[in-house]
Length: 395
Image 1 (cartoon, one colour):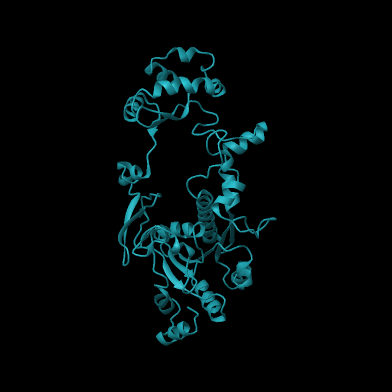
Image 2: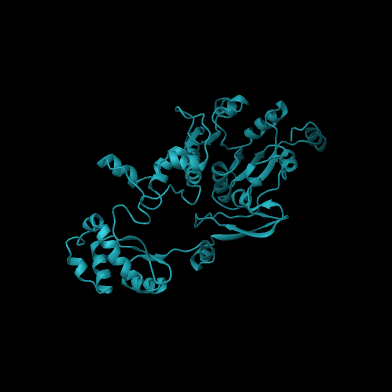
């Protein structure tokens, strides 16, 4: 293992996406992650496609590098073993509905009494407090409640989901930030703490312009397609063979662009002379630029506009993304070897560290793959003791 978190031990009780994505990041950065799963069932994400030779590649991409230990937390022996593992851990991450861990007697208040340096992170749909704290959550539900669907899609069109599970992912990122902040505090004081992150809170936090616009103007934002709400032109246009995105953020670039397309008159047009005016009269400007942009191919526009210093780019389909020279150069597609799937490609690590780079060293585990290893090496259990635990269906 390599990375800045080498030596940090994480006990991972998470499943599906938000929690596992959090512990994936910690693992990619060098932490030793032990994933606790329900015996015989495991993380629900093991059943999500696509599959290769019966193994979920969805699960593979989010749980790479972790160790799988099965443990029945409803049994007294299971709880006892879990508490012993907690004593050997720096961080515990769970994404159960608030109150679930308290029912097991494994909540932060209980565990921190015996392990005050423990950092306990709970990532849930609506957080540990508030009137909706007990409500279950899925990404689509939170996208709707958090308002992001209300500003996504085409004007006057039907509701459109953001194309990735954005509320899960943002919650994972904020949970990771919270954990790393708590680690720093612990390094100064020796004291752990409780990290409470909600998917809904996380989505509200990234609404940036939409919330500021409403709070300052009482204007309720609506879907704008690909365009930016306060910068124009800043959107996708149809080209001769697809689409091209242009992002002209100041009047100097606007002048260069207009000169290049042979329309200097647009610079002096009072409707388009400033960014604020261009945004106000977007409905007048869009058809003018659409006609012009449709006359050349995407690659020609990009070549010409980049030479001018005008920010622009294509809309790549996923096959083009994963094979893009820049993506490959940044090692954002990496390979892992698994005993069931063989070699498969998965996303790489976006955090590039000069002194302590992270790495993807191993694939996602088979269910219970590391139970014997962990109980033997971490808790010093004998083979007979482990055999009895299997007989008693504790592991």
